[in-house]
Amino acid sequence: MHPTVTSGELSFIDHDFDIDQDAVSNIPDDVQVPKGADKLVPVKVNSDGNCLPSCGSVFAFATPDRSDEMRVRIIKELALNEDAYLDDTFLKKGLTSKNEKSLKSQFA
Image (cartoon, rainbow, N blue to C red; front, top):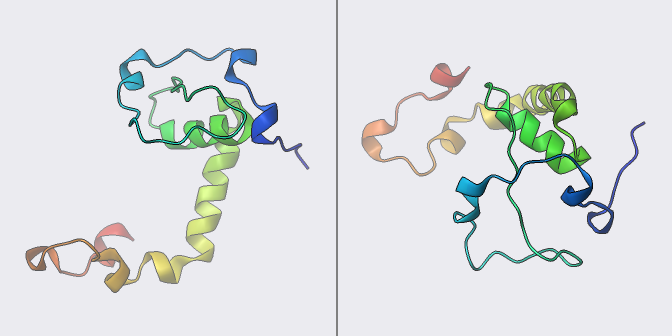
């Protein structure tokens, strides 16, 4: 079992992260800063096709080194909830009528 941290215990200053200067201006002004934090700072993750699991690993564990674990958790989530993720009604939300064909066959 891995240790967990609360938001008050997590500081990116204590870790070797580079601030993503290009993304700083993309943070909306109305985003609430979590209690106990001074500000939100975007950090860089590898752009090697593994960026979503790397980002999740940084967010959950304060290190990009557990991206493999995040990838496994994503696969487990998708497999355990296959019916929801392959539901055509759910997949069509937000699409126009011209795009309303069977989407699950494209994603599965």
